[in-house]
Image 1 (cartoon, rainbow, N blue to C red):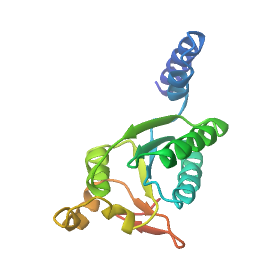
Image 2 (image 1 turned 180 degrees about the vertical axis):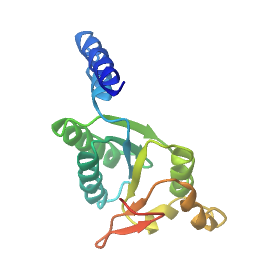
Image 3 (image 1 turned 30 degrees about the horizontal axis):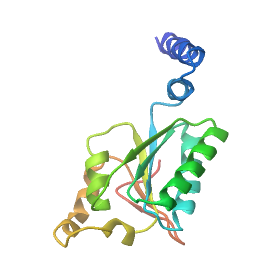
Length: 163
């Protein structure tokens, strides 16, 4: 059964590629699992991107980007994400959210079983645009169903391991 499913995905990807829908074709060829990278507009997002790409390559997952910032920084980072994902033959999906980053991640990732992990630049980035009420959601990370990798000078993991 698994061989049949892989062949079906390859034929679907071929059909989309022949029709000029290369991004859709890539999604068929990339893994079903995804690494969620959260872009906050900070300089340290580049470190997070490198870490997320490394995890995606090792797990054969696609890269999903949750953009929580506006302006030129987001556009430059998205261009860099697209270039690196293309170079590594990884699928790429982009979603934009506004407001509290912590709440955006939780709403976007909750009840999903396709996420390998969520990667964001640091703990303090989680509180950007959040009210003091939403900062009480610290215990909800356990409900994500996947690890939360906080990329700083020292990598922190919350909510599980990467095994």
